[in-house]
Structure formats: structure tokens, C-alpha cells
Length: 500
Ligand SMILES: *[C@@H]1O[C@H](CO)[C@@H](O)[C@H](O)[C@H]1NC(C)=O
Image (cartoon, rainbow, N blue to C red; front, side, top):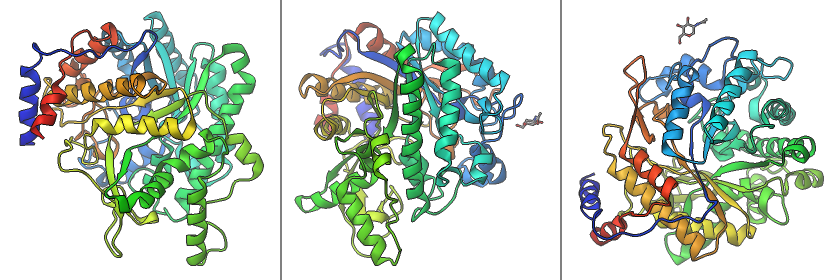
């Protein structure tokens, strides 16, 4: 913390002197993001159905670090016009938000569409368009209807059709005005983190449940993609993809290359290879590893469920761009037998990989978020290397603090340094990055971290019933980058490197 404080001071002192350019090419799109459950509140407004997060928060309040809940959150259910004004003030090109499945379909199924739900999202979309901001809509950002969870949620293969039905309703209502869609946000978090019990629904079954979820989430995405492609794209010409959360993983030593490749395939390739590779299906090395391991464990078949040839074809190529959420980096080494491997904090038990960070990487309020800007450039290079010259949209990137300050120098530094790496990837490595999304517009309900971890460009005072918003320094910084191609941005990273 002390080191970060020193860096922060230096970052400010050099601002007026040496200046570098964070100038992005014309047409590059800047946006800010939120998600429904994290900001809306109104959890029981009108006929909204219960979500798995509503259920977990109310039945097990101790699962949230500060025992807070999102019943009101930022109250964006009522204050959405205020939010749009903030987005407009920043001068960004698009606003990424999500639709709450149980707000639009209170029963989870498409037999009943909520009139108030429809009106709420329709008003946000119209409000954005009136302000010259493009809406970018996520269909699923983790708030599954509780009723569907009780029917097995993401482990039930029928969810593929339920999700496609929901997607068709959303496309029917909004595709005339929304041209960029994200089907599912962070499938890895939905399956691997949730099915280790860390997030709603809090089911602990990573051995089988997480991997069933993996297959169904991919099929659900692909089926929704095909619905759009067949029924809506000819008329509206929009774009649809999935947003994968990927960290940069590098080997600790030359001896750790193989385990690093396996860890990458387990965590990231499992959700990208089936969609973005030329061959489709599971990453071959991971498929072999899981088949062998399952056999040794006495299972009758691989715990990683097989795809049929038709399923491989359905999923392969179900994208119009590569959606990337990126925050942090890890160093990978082979685990020592018996070593504790708490998921993502210490390692990945499934592939017996230990995860470490480098001592000079910066810290954030979220313990998992270590700052290594170069990791983003390397990851962008890797995506290009693996999947070809795909169009990449960075759908999330951002930094958490404890929210005490409006002068959030560490967050400004984070954005400055990560954006610089995006530019380097574009200019030096010819990676086709077409847009960048800051997470997040507002401080919001950060899942099990409650309100202890703040990602907002705008601060929100959760102690006031009015939930007032206030711009942080990072909001002004980001507005500058988005508006002007940022004519004058200090290269504070040089100073940072020198100290470290
Ligand atoms: C909605 O939930 C709040 C708690 O967040 C509760 O006080 C209120 O009575 C509920 N309203 C309805 C209509 O159930």
C-alpha cells in the first residue's frame, strides 16, 4: 500500500511535463459497463421474478463479506436517467448494460413477458439513442431466474432452449434498436466459480456440475447466436458474441510451460476453443487430460461432457467479434503434491496448477486483482495467434479500490497503463482491437464482496437513500481519452517502472 501511495504522488508530479499520446484511431469505440443485478435494485418491483442472487442474499446473508445486499444497490431501477446523463457527460460511444432475465420474464419462461420489464429496458435504449450513445446489451450477467435453478439451472441441458427462448424475446423487443449483443457474460465465472460455491447459486460440485454447465452455457450461447443470425441479422445487421473473462497466465520458469498451457486451456480455452478455433470442440490437450483423469477416478465417461458433431458445428463460428473481459495476470507453476490450491487464490485443483503473482505487481481492493498492464498486450497477442485476425472488443477492464477517494490516482494509473498496452497491441502487433469498455460506470454491488470493493468511475454513496453519484478523477481521465483521443497523457508508467 505504501509503495502504491508513493507511485500515486509521482504520477501526479510528472503530469505537466513529459507527455505521451493515447491516441486511438478514428472509429475506435469507447464505452462504460454495468450489469443489472449490480446496479438496479428494485428486486421485487412490479412483477419481477426472483433470481438466484436474490435467493442467496436473502437466505444466506453471511455469504456476502459485509452482509449487504442488492435490494436497492445503486437504485438504477429508478435512477436510470441519471446514469444515462453520466454516460453522456463522459462522451463515450456506447453503454454496456444487462437485461435481468427474471425482470423481463418473471417466470423464467417466455410464456409471460413483463410489461414493466419491457418498458424499463426500452426506455433505457431509447434514452441512450436520444443522447447519441449506442446501447450494448448483455442478455445474461449471472441473475438466473430462481425457478430455473430449481430445475437444475445450467446443469440441465434444457436450459439451452430456455435461454434461446429468452434471447428471442429480447431480440424481438429490442434488436431494432440494439446492434451489439453479448449473450453470456463470463461463462467461466458462471460455471467454475459458482460451482465451487463462491457465487450464487452456491452449489458445490466442480467435479461434475461445473463441466455440465460449461457445455450447456456454450450451447446456449451458440443457439441464441443462431437465432439472431437466422431471424434478426438479415434485417438489423447487428453483431453477437460472448464475453470471456481471461487473465494473462505466464509460466514461472521454463519448466512450467506445459502446465501453463493446460491451465490456460482449462480456464479459458474451454470457453473459447469451441467457438473461435478453426476446428471447434474442446481444446484437444484438455479433452485428453480430462478423459484420462476421469478414467483414473473410476468414472464411466469423461467428466468433460462430449460434444456431438452437430454440436461442434453449432458452436464453432458462433461469433461476430471476440468479447474479452480482462483484469489481471498470474504466474503458473506445477503444484507440489498435497499443496492447498484454493480456487484461483492459490491454484486450480483440476489441473494441479499453482498460481502466484509477481511481487512488483500492484494491488487493488479486490484481492484477486493484481496489476500487470503488459499482461493485456500479451493476451491480445495470444488471442490473435490462436484464433487468427479476429475483431476483438474489450468488454470489461477496470480497477477496484475501497472507494474512499474521488482523487483515485491508482485507478487513473491503471486505465492509463492498460490503455497504453491496448494501443501497443494495435500498433506494434497489428491486433484488431475495435473497442474498449471500462468496468464500471458506477460503484455497485460487487457480488460476494458486497460494497467493500469499488470499481466505479463514479462513486455512489450507499449510505444515502438518494444514492448520489459523484465523478472520480478517473471519470474525467476516461472522458478525456474517449473524447479527444487524449492529447496529453503523462507517461507515469515510466516512473512506476523505475521505482519497482
Ligand atoms: C420488496 O422488498 C422489500 C425489501 O427489500 C420489502 O420491504 C418490501 O415489502 C417488498 N415489497 C413487496 C411488494 O413484496
